Image (cartoon, rainbow, N blue to C red; front, side, top):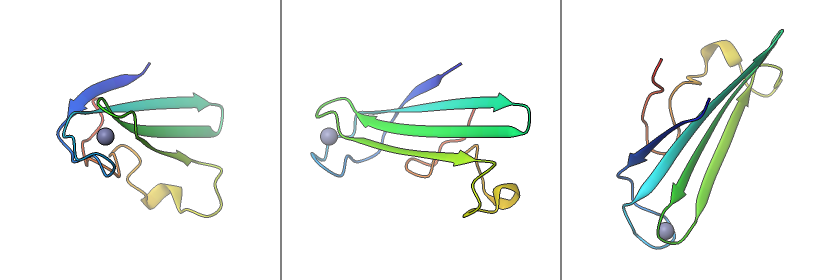
Length: 77
Ligand SMILES: [Zn+2]
């Protein structure tokens, strides 16, 4: 289930401070995906990232997957 909140972060494109931050978790068997999306309400500019437990480029256990890398908010659990 998506967890969406309004956040006050400066948009890199239009300098608006009205953004929404969306957090999604997907879990299936051994796979976990935590995705974050910060989107500007005014211009639609989006920043997205996803942490996958099967991503060999990251050390999944040490990455803070439940915190947005853009606005810094933590997921509600
Ligand atoms: Zn914007």
